[in-house]
Length: 241
Ligand SMILES: [Zn+2]
Ligand SMILES: [Zn+2]
Image (tube, rainbow, N blue to C red; front, side):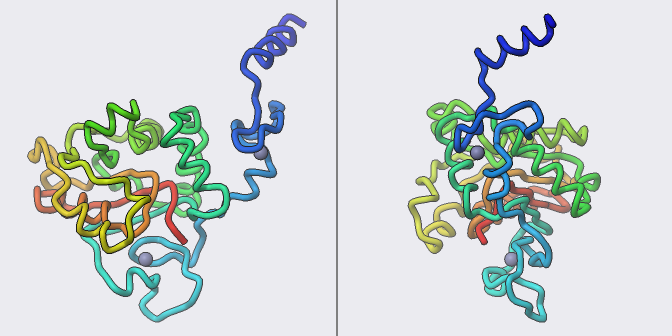
């Protein structure tokens, strides 16, 4: 009875409402989202693009999505958990700009679930790094959303988590406001490597929230490879469809 009473108090103080629609969540629901909002999530599913993992809507002999038919990247492999459509943009926006860091639990779990479902060979990586934010943006936001995800994954798989290797030394304007061509020119040369000896001949996994043109992931992978990394993978919560 005391336990029930304490649970009642807890629910009054910390009501478990769906993050998106505010529906009350009882303890049977997956935390933070109600079943109806959860059913609105588009999961990235096979067939996957061989380069970027984007779900292929049409078959082609190369096994590549339209974006990847035009370009190759410095990273060796990539995987994304969700497609950036439906309620995902709202979730990521809230996660990034309103400091809804509590969502990291749910979003990190989704990433881990998809790693398991699709047998992403996470054990081959020596180290996991978050995609860095420029220091000024970090100060303004108070956290790096990619770091919240990368730390959840590193913790789960007991991987070395380093936030000091890859830094962004040139602030880039918010990517959401730019067209694809600008994105590619903006990010080249935006990164710097510290402690290059620590990544020499290592397999590195970069974690970010979103993959769009892959320009940022490509630039970061490029400098990691130039600095001696043997293999670079990119893991993101979402990818544009
Ligand atoms: Zn809901
Ligand atoms: Zn692709």
